[in-house]
Image 1 (cartoon, rainbow, N blue to C red):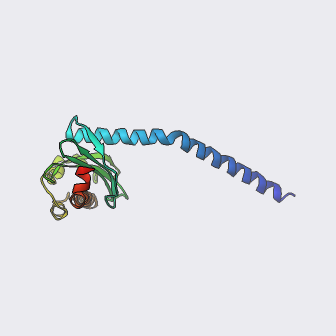
Image 2 (tube, rainbow, N blue to C red):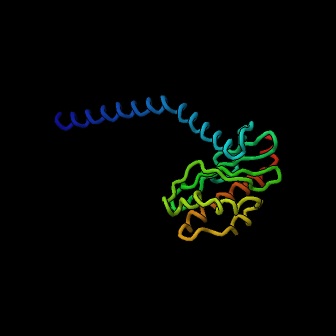
Image 3 (cartoon, one colour):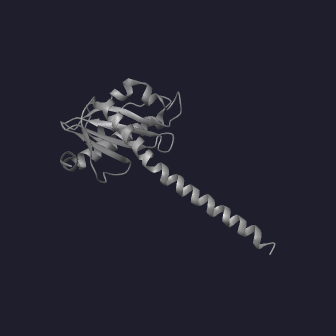
Length: 175
């Protein structure tokens, strides 16, 4: 009996804790989804200005979190890529009606402050991507000294966005 009682108590504690976790998840999941949607919308607005956009449903490839298209044919693609940190780069790549990068906004950046964060903090680095239309061009951008992993992560992220756009252009623009 002495050996069964502690096991029974621990089982009850685990069941109660699990039930509380499920309850907390159910209680907050809608708010979390709402906040993600607001963050995405505000990033699209920062990228293109005040405009109407709609999310496009579909699987657009590895690392592509969301795709939105505006009424005038511009596309915003949210991409998450590894820099120095796993999934440390979360950006929104703006693509104009001609299929060229027109802007980059950061949704979040989990790179090392002062080093990897240079990909966000140095506007000239981001501006190198503007006007390119293919992954090959994105790979040819000059990196930032001391932030090689983060620079490469940005190149991969922009390249993935361009690949997703170029491979799914019809579905995106008509979706």
